[in-house]
Length: 174
Image (cartoon, rainbow, N blue to C red):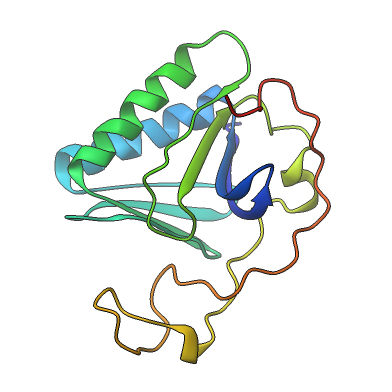
């Protein structure tokens, strides 16, 4: 069975990260849905009781983490970048990861990995990563900078990070 887990991890190694832990089959499932979104505007898949919707949206680079649905919103250029990353991660013959540093929310970095976080690591303690905390209404701002209620992907002041294993081959940032 394919493995695909995604979660928000505050202060993971160096910064807040949306981490994807998957095997090659899981990355192929994700790649297919991203390809559909790139071509048709939307793609979807479900694994581990979580539904993933990938949506092509102008000027977007956001992941809305939730249970039981995760919504990935990216513009066409970013979808193409993610497809290129998926190809490289599927074809590599050893555990590997890559960095997509163009997210708007819930963190600036998406770290897709293959065969690194499938047995243990941060997903052992948090199977789908940490939930993104609810936004405190007074801290919310719209893209225009005005006061607003909670919006998709908005986060509150980050909680103290959980104790996470840090010894994982091939995960040091260059």
